[in-house]
Image (cartoon, rainbow, N blue to C red; front, side):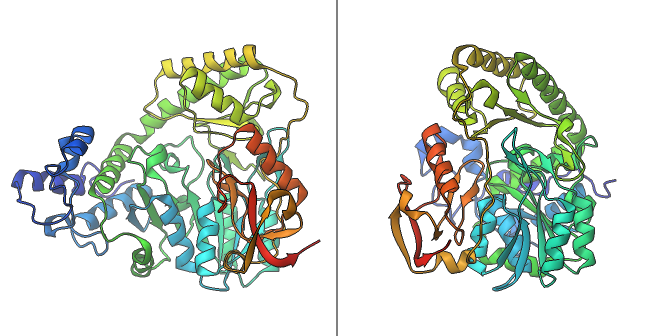
Length: 487
């Protein structure tokens, strides 16, 4: 139950007061409330440019908040049931990386699933933390990685009692949740912190029909991507703390990498969206759930497509499922997910969140309308009728268990050479390869390059996946560690 007045939006109110004061701006930004860049003002609007301002006394300072930002942080913490909440303007990437930096230094181990976002492995390159991967189970019919089994985490903890933290996705991009409370209690019992990537779980905090949240489970930190399901502007995020984390120390960590010129557009969008969810979140996400359940039922009646839901829950590797996720397996139609993704965009003007080898994800939010759902369902039915083909030659695995030879930092900063893709077999990768979205690496620095992985990369390229990561942007070559070949 909220203890603060959630109708307030301190940052918004301070910006409105500033506008009433009609200040003459002899400070940055140089567009001076849009007057110096009429083309930008024409595109974004005077209302937007008039509040794209710099820190000043009445607006507080993101690096060291003492007034309106501090009050807004307290309201956010209250809304999410956290001990503290930080406004993050570098996306949930910066929230995730601040979590790792807050608990790990060079040489420290962190236990985590391998199907993490690239931001996690990127920060290990910078800080020198050592990953201890818990390889998730696979659902081979769907071609997706599942959650971490409690027994697998327990084994990793027993084998690595010196690890500093356990990192959990809640949920995965596909809506899969691990046993968050069980893993948290297990980690705490062994003196380890619990870090939770809730980039795709903002809505969990505001609807009782959805899976458990990190703060409810007793986690130490959580990165919450408000701009995804929370309605704020792209690149805005919250970093939540449990009661056993030092607010002052974590703010120091954040200030190492976060900009000193925090965007008031992003911060006000967080403030406004928090207020909206705190007041109306239950009803908002009830509506989303109803739309997704309807879409799921209609898609499953088309034939071949499989829009999966709670029936895949096994209370272990799939401990729970986010029923707002409209994840659709396309393989029985004879098409890779990315092929359906491309057809929807190119032929039907429908932009889904992503398509991978076996699935598409249609991200449904309160901004969608029933007629949008009908259009998606009709398009999928027509694609099946026009494009269905034999399944022969399809790959299904979205995730291949890696073999880690070196830490990400050691591999990335090692002496390296560039080789043609097919000559990289049995070499150790010194860079990333991934499909984006979702941004989960197929290969990360320090991992063995196998024939199976090379086949997957070539297949994903042929199917049209958006491949990113390597220095060679065409992904015809890879950087590998010089002189190191493993069998």
